[in-house]
Image 1 (cartoon, rainbow, N blue to C red):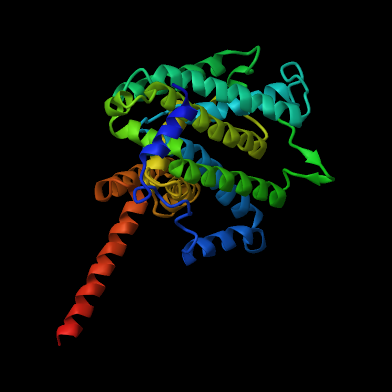
Image 2: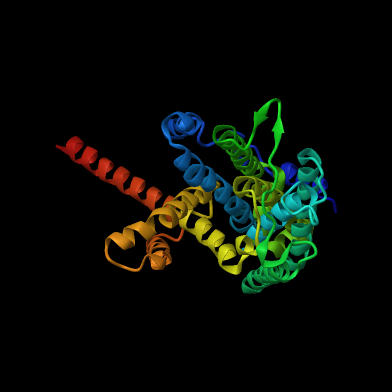
Amino acid sequence: MSLAHDAHVTVGRTTKAQRPARTWPEINNPAAWAVAAILLIMPLIASSFFLIEIFATTLILGTVALSLMFLAGYGGMVSLMQLTIAGFSAYMVAVFGVSGNPNISLGWPWWLAVPMALALATAFGTLGGALAVRTEGIYTIMITLAIGAAFYYFTNQNWAIFNGHTGINTVATPHFWGVNWRADIPFYYIVLAVAALCYFAVEYLSRAPFGLALQGVRDNPRRMAALGFNVNAHRVAAYAFASFVAALAGVLQVWNYRQISPGSVSVGACIDVLIIAVVGGITRPIGPFIGALIFVLLRTFALDFLVRLGLDGNRFRLLIGLGFLAIVFWSSDGVIGLWQRWRQHQRREASRSGGGRGHG
């Protein structure tokens, strides 16, 4: 049974009372509009360092974590190969495009190299997903982690294509319409646009028939199969979409640093993406970006903070780990869960105080 037919069945079986509204939940939220306005005017209020190293990096890592959140939050599939897919896309941009390694790079213009990289990375992630969907739970995590580890060691040892542990340096970035799109302000707006498109795409899919069917597969795959849905096909399609999102982030990543090396796709970096998604909140698309901001701030400033305290600055990951444990201990849904609990507490306090005044 095709996915399109499955989606049709979902719509047909959903009553009007049960059908979710096709509106964005943040459209009437003043805080969301305030954040959007700040992001748009960020080049006017932030230095080049904060603009690129903090905010652009946050949006890139958040987009990678968003692909993991889509799989885990809506599909119940925790994939540790999302950064691997992003790294594969970055490598393909360097291999097919122009770089400082002419013996490896093919020299294609960016408008040919980027679509090729996106297509190959999406296919790579889809094939990995087709293997992963045959398992569940911890076995899915182990298979995707194994794919990430295998790719890391392959890039580290292969010199003909990936240039070994040195990586590929001085990757060319796009120039068109008379604009250097790797300059700080144009590049920031490219990253912001891609992150926003991916965010709204995930928001839309979560309410579309495919997204609703995927959530049904997450909650009760046997029942969905009994209703005639192709469970594995929905899961593989989810991997394909998530792989495309991660591949977009990979293109931005290689443009940001102008180089790609095995260290960018190490096993530790793959786990960092999971930490980002969990810390921010793995049930809503905004969560990965919140987690990415926290991660980038800690990674950037924790070292100096520890040195000022007279401690070894190389132990900055200890702060990241402690923060991760604290957030997970107090909230299973990360920072978003803590925020929601606080708001519920405030509402209960307000209702109690209002009720007391009414009885008086």
